[in-house]
Length: 276
Image 1 (tube, rainbow, N blue to C red):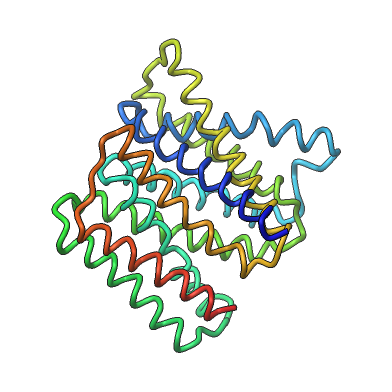
Image 2: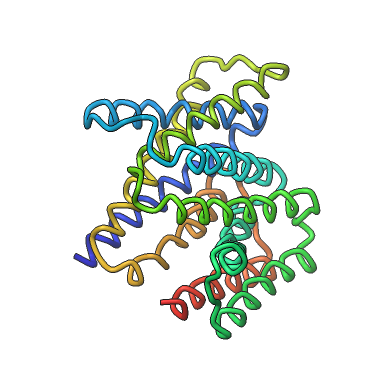
């Protein structure tokens, strides 16, 4: 079962990595337009699923579902903005410090406790971010701010999902997220809309496909075996993204950047181990 979970998580990581690469590749489109197509592409899967399985679209905890959708849309938009300014590996790595912010939010909002060793792990991850910013000339302030802000809002998303719990189907939560993102992205992109030409339509809609299958196979991996065995594997998205970016987009990384990314991932994986 563990081998199957590894395969599922690898497929998920590859799907998310391809999503990152295509967002970077389509960077000449307005970021809100990218958010719009990313959402529409996923809705092509979530809406038929809910209809087929006769699951209510409205859900139970509507206020939390809407809040999760709005906050998730902000986090996604900020992340796509960061990809425009940073190398993909750096942007993805910085976004992944979101569990740190989630833990801090949980400490104050949910009264959850944080172990002393977790703070040490957080420190390792943050030192990796400092190393990236302080010693890598490829990291600019705008991209760094967008990536960290995305991580903060992603951490808040975890809190909303925790509050929703199992009262609503996961696809209902995703559907709310995508509908809200499609509306916000669509409205904000009107003034700066660029009509896609030919293959660009397919590439833009494929963003939602990669996002959907990334989420689907990650869920399958978690359902196949114990979470503490498979969850650290989600960070191979960073490796896939860096490899594809280097081959396809000629992205390069300094040794300091690689060390910073390694420290971020090490801190996050250790935090997960300590927490479990």
